[in-house]
Image (cartoon, rainbow, N blue to C red):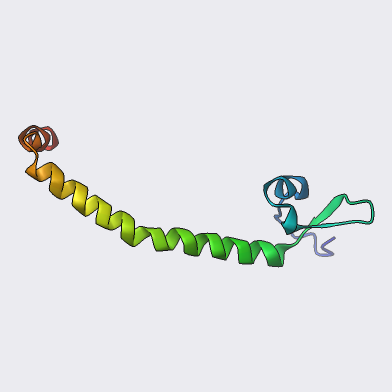
Length: 83
């Protein structure tokens, strides 16, 4: 408990255990009792990096799809709709 009574935010241990059981510590009875925040931070960083690496590939796909639309016979109709 915070002696200065400063509001704290946290995760619900049961919810975290449902997503990834390795992110919680368990007592002698096997019940989850605390979130392993140091592990959560590492997991979040890993997930961020995975998503971050997808961005250049998605940008290439957008460019290719846009170029394809411009060459399409429907491109005249598409341009007219965006004006």
